[in-house]
Image (cartoon, rainbow, N blue to C red; front, side):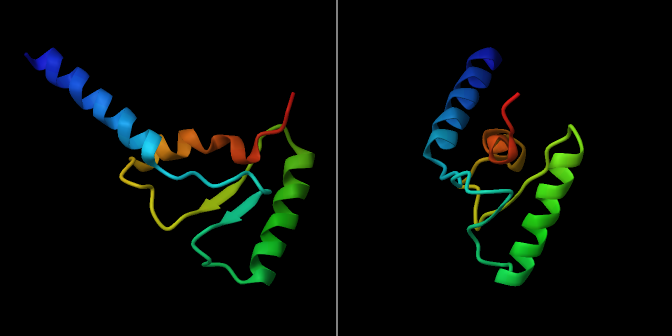
Amino acid sequence: MAAALAVAAWAASLIVAVAASYPAASGPVVDEAKLLSDATRSALANQLVKDNQAQTAQLAVAIVGTTGGVSIEDYALAVQHVGRRSS
């Protein structure tokens, strides 16, 4: 019974994840919630581009108004492509 409930909960989380809206990869800073000024967004993006070129780690910032019911951890995993560079 417990296993069946766990599977049902997992399946429900997949349905919610599919229904969530994810930001388009438009650069190192995506601010769909419109929290950053243009100057702040531009300065942050420029710094991230420089940092990403100087190291192997990739950094990106995505600011959204809601994760659409998806846990922040699952949402972050789904949008990790925003700053990913091809190898």
